[in-house]
Length: 338
Image 1 (cartoon, one colour):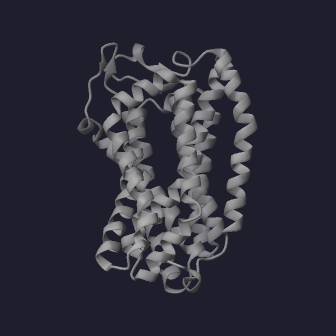
Image 2 (image 1 turned 60 degrees about the horizontal axis):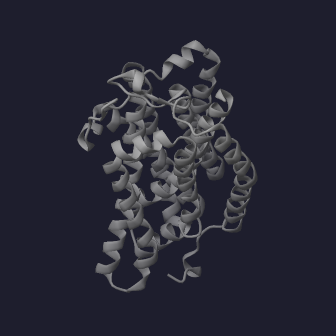
Image 3 (image 1 turned 180 degrees about the horizontal axis):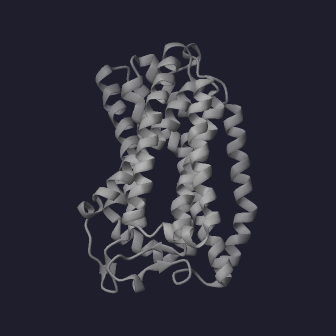
């Protein structure tokens, strides 16, 4: 039973990592939208670079949420009761972003477009920030005990939580700027290249500060100190982060983007591995913490779900790989309908 629970814990972490890797560049492009989109043509290129992909990327969010509900129902219940306000803000922001893709081009009016441009930015920036705040607070431990949750939305905005939010935003800005480099041409590509190079040292500094802060604010390093081989995850994260800069200098944007993707995945697993077996730790009463071992569904449920995952996840991956391949070319302004 414990092996099955551990498998599902790491599948849970993997699904979140894949979501951050795929939808992360969507958030990054949307956050950079008002800064790199100097003209309506630039904005159309940026938005259309995501058009065929963004909704498919969000499948991983639904999958991660579904796995939490089905495999760890107690965690799901506590998460959506304690982090309800933050999760609802994320949901509303994602709705605004999705609607902006469909509504911006419907009316040829500058004021109309400005409204949806703002929604596109808000719907990209705030989820990036709030996902980071939420996961940093999970790493830190949340104020709950056997009597329930004792925090508020404002209590999540502590220094470490905000640092986690800034880290996520920086990771996604780097990811998004590289995506624009891949998908655009001319002046927009050059500005995106400069932006990617400017973001990199900021990301490096924030990542280092977050790693140091985690030593004092969390227990994430306990598993690493007990099993030093796990530090390989951090080494991979550092190597991938350095790889971003190396490939940027060579103008090898695809390779830089894949290095950014690996950075996001390894950073996510840094936290997941440090948490294990905790999933929702309590800083008030550690005995009430929810773990993969005390909050999972029945063995039969986990076995059935594992069979479903083995069959359907490769299908989803294959579909997304095909989609990315199909739309791998640059977005050309003369080919856009809107």
